[in-house]
Length: 170
Image 1 (cartoon, one colour):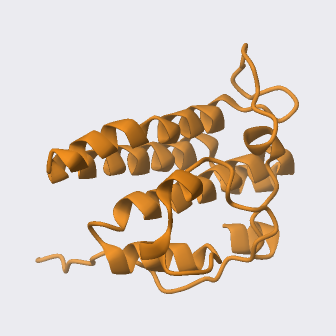
Image 2 (cartoon, helix red, strand yellow):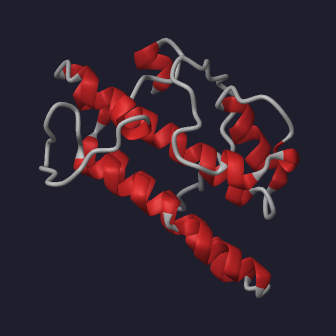
């Protein structure tokens, strides 16, 4: 969607990066402050302490559960906000916020996913147009919200997890 709606460049979303909003928030937002994007951001930021403890305890399945919970919340953001409808209704500020939030969540998910699926995580990293070997990323530096720079060009690639089509038996 970033390629389609923003010519392949990560859209700006300064309220989630430089100027964190303060309550109260409203559904639909005020001046670009959107509750679902803020909820996903806050959710992603709370994963690290639990994730570290789970990894130290070698509780890998629970650590993966944390990652999948974030992925499910990101998918829910797509369902809730329907970016294609935001485009149709010319709500570009909201669309920009939604897509930036999703891309930033993916960037952080790639870091968490790396110990389990290094090739897929590196591909996510590369498709977000990020340089370097993900194995050399310092989580304390790169794992913080807001490190994805608006204007960064994504690199569309093949589907990492293609849909499996099954034949219907008659």
